[in-house]
Amino acid sequence: MGVQLQVCGDVPPDGLIVCNHLSYLDILVISAAAPAVFVSKSEVRSWPILGWIARRTGTIFVERGHSCGAGRTVEEIEGALRAGRRVVLFPEGTSSGGETVLPFKSSLLEPGRQGPISAAALAYSLEPGDGDPAEVVCYWKDMTLLPHLIRLLGRRSIRATLVFARLDGSDADRKSLARRLHSLVLTLKQTVDCNQQQAGRGVAPGHGRSRGKAQ
Image 1 (cartoon, helix red, strand yellow):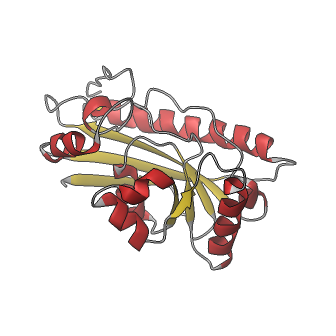
Image 2 (cartoon, helix red, strand yellow):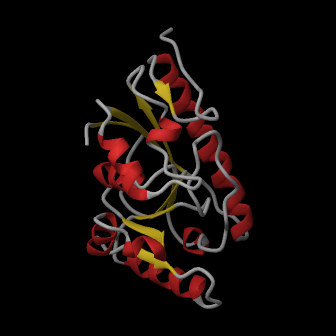
Protein backbone atom coordinates (compact mmCIF):
# COMPACT_ATOMS: atom_id res chain seq x y z
CA MET A 1 0.00 0.00 0.00
CA GLY A 2 3.04 2.27 -0.15
CA VAL A 3 3.07 3.02 3.56
CA GLN A 4 6.33 4.25 5.07
CA LEU A 5 6.32 3.67 8.82
CA GLN A 6 8.36 5.61 11.37
CA VAL A 7 8.24 4.33 14.95
CA CYS A 8 9.37 6.48 17.87
CA GLY A 9 9.84 5.36 21.46
CA ASP A 10 10.17 1.84 22.82
CA VAL A 11 7.63 -0.65 21.49
CA PRO A 12 5.83 -2.14 24.53
CA PRO A 13 6.74 -5.81 24.92
CA ASP A 14 3.37 -6.60 26.48
CA GLY A 15 0.33 -5.14 28.19
CA LEU A 16 -2.54 -2.93 27.11
CA ILE A 17 -1.88 -0.21 24.51
CA VAL A 18 -4.32 2.67 23.94
CA CYS A 19 -4.11 4.77 20.79
CA ASN A 20 -6.00 7.47 18.92
CA HIS A 21 -8.05 6.14 16.02
CA LEU A 22 -8.03 7.55 12.48
CA SER A 23 -8.64 4.74 9.99
CA TYR A 24 -8.88 1.00 9.37
CA LEU A 25 -5.28 1.45 8.22
CA ASP A 26 -4.35 1.94 11.91
CA ILE A 27 -4.61 -1.79 12.52
CA LEU A 28 -2.18 -2.70 9.74
CA VAL A 29 0.27 0.05 10.73
CA ILE A 30 0.30 -0.80 14.45
CA SER A 31 0.54 -4.52 13.66
CA ALA A 32 3.66 -3.87 11.59
CA ALA A 33 5.35 -2.29 14.62
CA ALA A 34 3.79 -4.27 17.47
CA PRO A 35 1.84 -7.43 16.55
CA ALA A 36 -1.18 -7.46 18.85
CA VAL A 37 -4.77 -8.40 19.48
CA PHE A 38 -7.12 -5.53 18.64
CA VAL A 39 -10.42 -4.57 20.21
CA SER A 40 -12.91 -3.54 17.52
CA LYS A 41 -16.60 -2.89 17.01
CA SER A 42 -18.49 -5.97 15.92
CA GLU A 43 -19.46 -4.44 12.55
CA VAL A 44 -15.87 -4.84 11.35
CA ARG A 45 -16.34 -8.61 11.40
CA SER A 46 -18.46 -8.43 8.22
CA TRP A 47 -16.27 -5.96 6.28
CA PRO A 48 -14.78 -7.31 3.03
CA ILE A 49 -11.09 -8.24 3.26
CA LEU A 50 -10.50 -6.28 6.48
CA GLY A 51 -13.11 -8.29 8.35
CA TRP A 52 -11.42 -11.51 7.26
CA ILE A 53 -8.05 -10.19 8.46
CA ALA A 54 -9.60 -9.13 11.76
CA ARG A 55 -11.13 -12.55 12.37
CA ARG A 56 -7.92 -14.38 11.44
CA THR A 57 -5.79 -12.29 13.80
CA GLY A 58 -7.93 -12.94 16.87
CA THR A 59 -9.62 -9.55 17.12
CA ILE A 60 -11.82 -9.07 20.18
CA PHE A 61 -15.17 -7.77 18.94
CA VAL A 62 -17.29 -5.47 21.09
CA GLU A 63 -21.03 -6.12 20.87
CA ARG A 64 -22.28 -2.61 21.45
CA GLY A 65 -25.81 -2.18 22.73
CA HIS A 66 -25.74 -5.39 24.81
CA SER A 67 -25.80 -4.96 28.57
CA CYS A 68 -23.28 -7.73 29.17
CA GLY A 69 -21.09 -6.83 26.19
CA ALA A 70 -18.53 -4.73 28.07
CA GLY A 71 -18.05 -7.33 30.81
CA ARG A 72 -17.50 -10.12 28.29
CA THR A 73 -15.04 -7.95 26.34
CA VAL A 74 -13.07 -7.11 29.49
CA GLU A 75 -12.76 -10.83 30.25
CA GLU A 76 -11.43 -11.51 26.74
CA ILE A 77 -8.91 -8.65 27.06
CA GLU A 78 -7.73 -10.02 30.41
CA GLY A 79 -7.36 -13.49 28.90
CA ALA A 80 -5.21 -12.18 26.04
CA LEU A 81 -3.05 -10.19 28.45
CA ARG A 82 -2.56 -13.22 30.70
CA ALA A 83 -1.40 -15.14 27.63
CA GLY A 84 1.36 -12.56 27.20
CA ARG A 85 -0.11 -10.83 24.16
CA ARG A 86 -0.29 -7.11 23.52
CA VAL A 87 -3.85 -5.78 23.30
CA VAL A 88 -4.60 -2.55 21.42
CA LEU A 89 -7.66 -0.51 22.37
CA PHE A 90 -9.03 2.64 20.72
CA PRO A 91 -10.83 4.23 23.68
CA GLU A 92 -12.25 7.13 21.65
CA GLY A 93 -14.83 4.59 20.52
CA THR A 94 -14.80 5.89 16.94
CA SER A 95 -12.40 7.24 14.34
CA SER A 96 -11.84 10.91 13.52
CA GLY A 97 -10.13 13.22 11.07
CA GLY A 98 -7.25 13.66 13.49
CA GLU A 99 -7.78 17.28 14.48
CA THR A 100 -7.69 16.30 18.12
CA VAL A 101 -8.06 13.26 20.39
CA LEU A 102 -11.67 12.62 21.36
CA PRO A 103 -12.51 11.92 25.03
CA PHE A 104 -11.70 8.38 26.13
CA LYS A 105 -14.39 5.93 27.19
CA SER A 106 -13.33 4.10 30.35
CA SER A 107 -15.53 0.99 30.22
CA LEU A 108 -12.82 -1.32 28.79
CA LEU A 109 -9.82 0.09 30.66
CA GLU A 110 -10.10 -2.03 33.82
CA PRO A 111 -7.43 -4.53 32.65
CA GLY A 112 -5.01 -1.60 32.39
CA ARG A 113 -5.18 -1.06 36.14
CA GLN A 114 -3.91 -4.58 36.75
CA GLY A 115 -0.80 -4.63 34.57
CA PRO A 116 1.46 -2.65 32.26
CA ILE A 117 -0.28 -0.05 30.10
CA SER A 118 1.12 2.15 27.34
CA ALA A 119 -0.10 5.01 25.19
CA ALA A 120 0.45 5.46 21.46
CA ALA A 121 -0.26 8.25 19.00
CA LEU A 122 -0.59 7.85 15.26
CA ALA A 123 -0.61 10.38 12.42
CA TYR A 124 -0.55 10.16 8.64
CA SER A 125 0.87 12.42 5.96
CA LEU A 126 0.94 12.44 2.16
CA GLU A 127 3.21 13.80 -0.53
CA PRO A 128 2.49 17.48 -1.33
CA GLY A 129 -0.31 17.68 -3.86
CA ASP A 130 -1.41 14.10 -3.22
CA GLY A 131 -4.53 14.96 -1.28
CA ASP A 132 -5.64 15.67 2.25
CA PRO A 133 -4.89 12.91 4.81
CA ALA A 134 -8.04 13.79 6.75
CA GLU A 135 -10.10 12.93 3.67
CA VAL A 136 -7.90 10.35 1.92
CA VAL A 137 -6.43 8.31 4.81
CA CYS A 138 -8.73 8.93 7.77
CA TYR A 139 -11.95 6.91 7.63
CA TRP A 140 -14.71 8.78 9.44
CA LYS A 141 -17.90 10.80 9.04
CA ASP A 142 -20.22 9.15 6.50
CA MET A 143 -17.48 7.62 4.34
CA THR A 144 -18.07 4.21 2.75
CA LEU A 145 -15.37 1.57 2.69
CA LEU A 146 -14.86 0.59 -0.96
CA PRO A 147 -14.65 4.10 -2.50
CA HIS A 148 -12.37 5.17 0.34
CA LEU A 149 -10.10 2.15 -0.12
CA ILE A 150 -9.81 2.76 -3.87
CA ARG A 151 -8.90 6.39 -3.27
CA LEU A 152 -6.36 5.38 -0.62
CA LEU A 153 -4.68 2.85 -2.93
CA GLY A 154 -4.24 5.57 -5.54
CA ARG A 155 -1.80 7.60 -3.43
CA ARG A 156 1.87 7.69 -4.39
CA SER A 157 2.97 7.07 -0.80
CA ILE A 158 1.63 7.34 2.71
CA ARG A 159 3.78 8.17 5.71
CA ALA A 160 2.65 6.88 9.10
CA THR A 161 4.30 8.05 12.29
CA LEU A 162 3.67 6.02 15.44
CA VAL A 163 5.02 6.97 18.85
CA PHE A 164 4.83 4.92 22.07
CA ALA A 165 5.22 5.83 25.75
CA ARG A 166 4.65 3.82 28.92
CA LEU A 167 2.20 5.24 31.47
CA ASP A 168 3.76 5.28 34.92
CA GLY A 169 1.97 4.96 38.24
CA SER A 170 -1.47 3.59 39.06
CA ASP A 171 -5.01 4.95 39.31
CA ALA A 172 -7.80 4.49 41.80
CA ASP A 173 -10.47 4.02 39.11
CA ARG A 174 -11.01 3.68 35.37
CA LYS A 175 -12.13 7.27 34.83
CA SER A 176 -8.95 8.63 36.38
CA LEU A 177 -6.93 6.25 34.20
CA ALA A 178 -8.85 7.37 31.11
CA ARG A 179 -8.04 11.02 31.82
CA ARG A 180 -4.33 10.34 32.30
CA LEU A 181 -4.12 8.22 29.17
CA HIS A 182 -5.98 10.83 27.13
CA SER A 183 -3.58 13.53 28.29
CA LEU A 184 -0.56 11.40 27.38
CA VAL A 185 -1.91 10.44 23.93
CA LEU A 186 -2.70 14.09 23.22
CA THR A 187 0.86 15.08 24.17
CA LEU A 188 2.33 12.36 21.96
CA LYS A 189 0.07 13.38 19.08
CA GLN A 190 1.19 16.99 19.28
CA THR A 191 4.79 15.83 19.05
CA VAL A 192 4.02 13.70 15.99
CA ASP A 193 2.13 16.53 14.28
CA CYS A 194 5.01 18.94 14.85
CA ASN A 195 7.57 16.50 13.43
CA GLN A 196 5.49 15.85 10.32
CA GLN A 197 4.84 19.53 9.69
CA GLN A 198 8.57 20.20 9.88
CA ALA A 199 9.05 17.48 7.27
CA GLY A 200 6.90 19.53 4.88
CA ARG A 201 4.17 16.97 4.19
CA GLY A 202 0.39 17.19 4.39
CA VAL A 203 -0.71 16.06 7.86
CA ALA A 204 -4.02 14.52 8.93
CA PRO A 205 -4.97 16.97 11.72
CA GLY A 206 -6.39 20.44 11.20
CA HIS A 207 -9.93 20.15 9.77
CA GLY A 208 -8.35 18.59 6.67
CA ARG A 209 -6.40 21.74 5.83
CA SER A 210 -3.17 21.44 7.81
CA ARG A 211 -0.06 21.82 5.71
CA GLY A 212 3.45 22.00 7.11
CA LYS A 213 6.48 23.69 5.57
CA ALA A 214 10.03 22.49 5.93
CA GLN A 215 11.85 24.33 8.68
